[in-house]
Length: 462
Image (cartoon, rainbow, N blue to C red):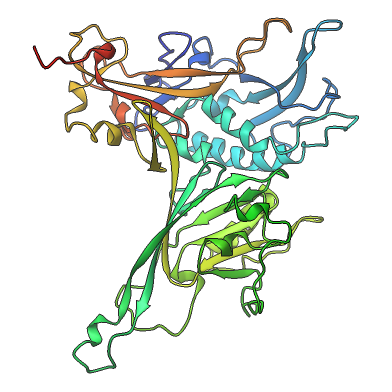
């Protein structure tokens, strides 16, 4: 792939080199800043510090590509920088096979994504206690490590959410994360009149309100839906308990946010599945609740269990699967009405915090201020008049360079910005099948600045 970042700390948006082995029907790609010297002739190597327990050494067991079927792209090993008596930095080295990471071929990109999903389950199995004598990953760091790996790989605009939030646009599911908020829009059923009566046509699902749930992390690494209720010592239980569903014994029906935080239901991983079919608003069959009438939440202790339950749910089968040994049972939550759930993330626009739905793009934010063609928007680094409309995007990214020494490892996490410079030939924003550079999806914590270039302030006296 071509298009190295213009500076050390800027992402660039580009296409793969045209010619043999490329696919112009894919892209454009987001090129992380620290890949400016990467070459397709070598596997991609990423280095992350702060993820290992103290006893970790280069002999600690890692992961080799191909250890499990269909995971062909990702490997992991442990190394260190520095030696005693100086501080020794424990490092996780991630290797991504060049055949897949630097390819624009559709088949290779599919293998890369499949491998990444399977790699998640492998990473979890390397987590150990702080007192482990053999070393490994710290408890509950898999999610953070996967996120930073994704941000340091060249990905297309459409791949970004698939790798960062496990957003499957075909099967319509997404993994929930600490920091997400959920807007739960419910449609309760109203009964107005009996059949053949004038008001019979109003018997229907109708909007009955929205609720917002803020997600966080419990101290044991499990996801919480209600920070207040998660602090209760005894917790909240239903009285009397809801009888188990005959077909789905792990299924619980929720009427309000507290039903998401019931005692015994905490799990490390939760996945939101939006069904591809919902009952029409005027469906008169109100015989009872059904898991297909609303969004479905699946909770599991591991990525492996979650993947198995998801596959069953998507296929219309029994998602109350038997988990791996020592894991808690699957928990499934549906809602007692026709419900749509939207996950949202926190971003900053001109230093003001906002919540926006996952999937919101840079273009959506710019259009909050002015409806203009992207070509009229000046981007960071452009040499134009200071009164021109400008936009900037900054993103927190882990430094994936190998530390040169234990005394100067460099910043662990730093702010990188995006170089939205237009195409040098046409003068227009770079565009492709995934859209142009302004269609880049936003992530948690992104900082966006829209206004006159370089902080220029308009004066009422001018």
